[in-house]
Image (tube, rainbow, N blue to C red; front, side, top):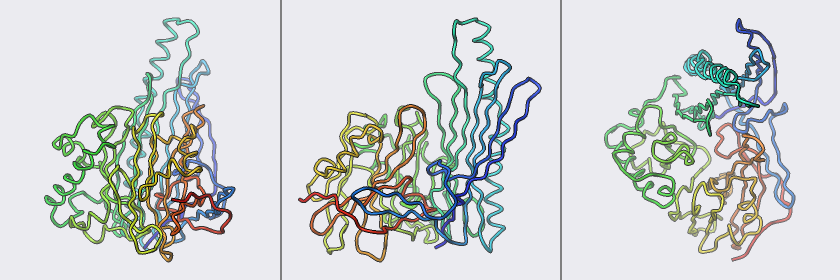
Amino acid sequence: MVSIFILLCTACADNISYSESEEEITQENTVLNPQTEEEQNAGTVLEEQNEGAVLIERTVRDAPVRIDFYTREQSTKNGDDIVLYMRKCIYPVVTIAGNENAADRINADIQKRIDSFDTSTSVLDDADQDYQSMRDSREADFQFHPYSDELIFTAVRADSNVVSFLETSQYYAGGAHGMDCYVGLNYDTQTGERINFAELSGNTDAFRQDTLAFIHDLAATAAYQGIMWGNDVNEQQEILYQDERWYLSTSGLVLFSNPYELGPFFAGKIEFTIPYSDLGGMDLKERYDYTGAKTIRLQTEEVCYLDLNGDGREEKIQFYIDQMGNSDTDVHFIIDGTDYAVEHEELSRQFSDDHYIFSWAQCFLYDMDPANPEIEIAFQMNYTTWEDDIVTPHTFLYRYERTGNLTYLGSIVGTITDPTVKLCMMSQSTESEVRN
């Protein structure tokens, strides 16, 4: 399997220029990890020590394929020294050892999207016009909030067969909130060409119908009906099977809708993940199967059966949120009848910490070390101070022991679904656990 190396060092180059309209433009270029959007020190090891838990080592994957992420930020001021507009772009540059042509094709395709973003002036023009209108109307003590544009690429799969990105476009042009738009980009690692949905299976029509039936069943569950307007299969087909509304991740085929398409704004991007274990029965081509660390997303209240502790017996597992997106909701994680989100002190605390957006928490069953029989449990939540718009993903890792205890292993900044890194446990400290 080909994996990814992220350049973790930081390099900055600033320049300032002025346009003919006397607008000051400041731009900064930085190398960073977009999964956390945090600049990292040079090196290949990221560790987080958790008191009373295991030391988790988060390392970059050393392999022939490398993805370097860069960021460009720009702000524009007018003659009144008011920031009118801010622009940010985080984009990847792919390198494939021994296959420069494929890497060049991927990079060229991404560059076209960046060029289109860079040349667009609609949000900046709106900012200038709206500011002038507010000033000319002589509104007393008016405060102008800068308009903004962002284009962010996130790696969602990267191996010898597939390199996939989720492209997020965000803009704010006044009003109560901004708008988001998402695009899935999937590339063949060997050729560098874009993968079309029709290429995923030898029987395109049957594959489409099988995946749509799976999605329709998911949409009927309480987890999805709480954030969707309905469950019309024709509407789902029309919206989800558009070009660039899907991507291959480490946990399966993901089809998604943009805000306001299948649900209200608060629901954001509504995703439906079809696991690789199910895709095999739908005639997914072998070359698109994922052979990396087992990663299973628990996305509804439906029961999952899996041997978590290697004792040869499958546990009955459920994870669900009573009301997704509601800050007053309860989160449930149940193994063989015990709700550890309630009974486990550490997990209960994490699901009630207001700094973590637990109402949108995600749960994954993740095989950190295939050489060991245990399957780890990962809870991903975004952290915020609520003082700004910055959110940072955090992952909390647990293990279900043969004794029936749930052991807290520790946390990392970032996600286990980031295909460019790997996790391993370094040492054992004291355990945080609860008995059945």
